[in-house]
Length: 553
Image (cartoon, rainbow, N blue to C red; front, side, top):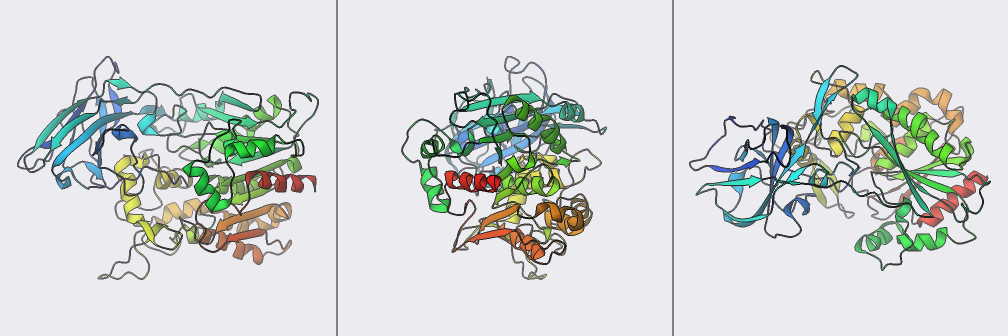
């Protein structure tokens, strides 16, 4: 679960190129967005955006676009848009948090346009699709290298009087600067033959490796490894840094939630002579649909699971001195990484020695956050709804239970950010990983983002292909159960922000019923009112000591 996703409200998705008709009020209310040949020589297929803010800095494209958003945002698809050709964003275009430009109060604003450039993929499954190719930024379209942005302009907008603002996206966003290697931290990036074959385009995997004290001084010593799963980041594992710094706002929040120390404090613990000697590795595996593949094979994303296990991990373990035994390969991770860590352990119990899983994405699709995918008819409305009384279903809440946003809002947000499952956000990521491929080559959603209607065939597909981890264990316990004893450790807050504790309850309820062997796992619940991010009250150093003790045992 990527909690910093870009959330937008739906207007409608339109194809915007020169010559396309627009819906006009009495007075034209629109932006025209174009780009010069000097910025991009050929035509662009992608999506055009306009950001409207009340302050000029940071640039409007970089101002917060989280839950509810801090400013309006409107977008349309473009297809083979030529240099100098206008893409029209008007009152009929998708928008957030306002549904339409007509709803914008009259006033002075700062505006900026962006063109998100898509890549053509001729996939091995025979489908040809257009999507955003990650350029090692982690699917952040507003800062992705190669995307085009305009300058920031101050304008007066009044839909009652009409306006036509022209914006030229003449600036090309620069490449990502890779962090330098140090004594402690190394980076790798390799082309994946498996993924390149599937996508018909060069695809890459990466890893960031944290080395123990004395690694260079003991060239004949091999070390156990902890594979730490999570969202795309080029930062060192556990925010490790040798630079002293005062706690940031994020540090203070993490300390409140789960006791995590600052990156420098972790360095002090990691580098102490008494600290257990091990290697920690994080992975980079962005897809055209999300910043992370969920480390599995899927019909829409391709064979990421095989590529990680057969290409990336062998590369890491042959280029660094890692003990290549299951008991010395441990897993951990939180949220999306929590789901990945548990799934990797469950599906590959002969390869990994155990997992310490934190606040994982849905482990039981009877509790897909607050939705029961198997019995609910609609993701938007709670079962108590009637024809005349609609009870909205929430997908995020505060620790005291106060709601933050509904499934309907989030679904429509993602539909506005990208058509055909290309929002690069959480729900579309679920659909791309868990769901089947549609006839058009794009993912089939577990529910309709416009109406909330759950697609029973897509849900059955997800269950039958093993993405409901609890259902997978029920079906395969006789063979995998004996290999999992003492290997499953799950931590989650009792008021997880995204209702993820409910899926954990489902998994625990099943494990309590297991036989031959009977293994209940280890489950720890943060109480009272612990939100998403609760880490068992442990520092990162304490977690790694706990994992190392299990390795030694």
